[in-house]
Image (cartoon, rainbow, N blue to C red; front, side, top):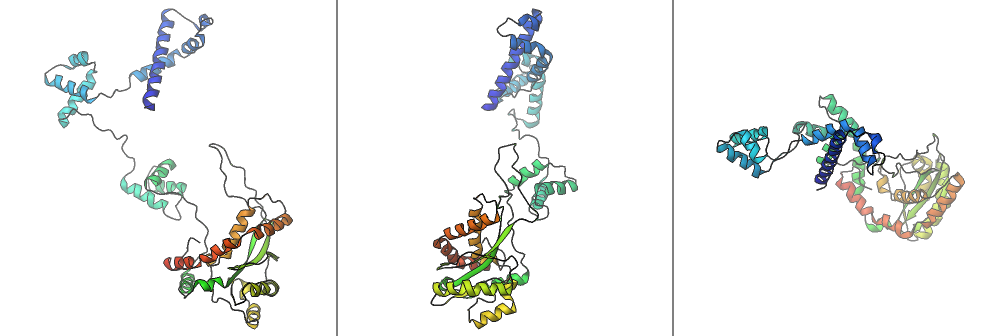
Length: 392
């Protein structure tokens, strides 16, 4: 309906302009003669662009008209009655060459109905479209630009917008790939063996998850929502971005204080943390006993650390599969901390540390317990993925 309305407006404007041009020519009007006329602005513009208006009106007038089936049937009936094309034109007001085309089509198809027009025929064949879809699914050529260049290299002349349209027709949507640790066959096998052990929910309720994490000073989002045609503000970056390193432990019964540690954690530093921070808190939070879960960091697996843990008779979940942050719930707790810090306007390292402590204390016990309760689902996801990556 809107297209018909636009065409009608253009047609009316062109006819009005054409009438103005005729009046101007018949009465020898000039722009200077129309200063006092109420429509002097319109007629002045018409006279200034008279040639363009005549040209545009002629193009509109010469546009092919789509005749309905009733008119086409009448043309065929008159031709079958041996009327000439000139007679048909005078009687039905259908151009002679249009009547000739309708009659020729009737003789070929034995039907006077107009053909269903599908628009321009597709530029690409089905094989070419499938090839482009495969290129979009490839890790190396998975972007619109690379897929377009790869298609052009094979002799298929396509534009980026064509590839984008083909992607949507194929049901493809672009999603940012989340960074995940590289998993070799040995890593997958170790993860699968770990997940298939007979773990119970009671085991995870008495497990203490601990780890270190770095927090950068400028926690900025990768993109920004802007209006069409606008550019987002540049992202502030530094070659050596200021950051702090923190340590903590969480379990079903709570969490330790947030501890600021050295950036290069060594075995001696880690043993001091376990002695002064972890042991007192874990023994008080789990008087019936607990197990320690930490990853394979060098300070965690050093010979000195192993000997101290053995001397203290601490129960440790071992062996721990390498490259498995999705099985350590404290990574999710770190994510909560960093997400909430990102909402704050922090401009110094001291302010970052104070804010981190405040936000850490605001993380509730139920939030930690929700993470602990997800452990059985995480293990099932690892088994279903045959030791591969999971959504956690």
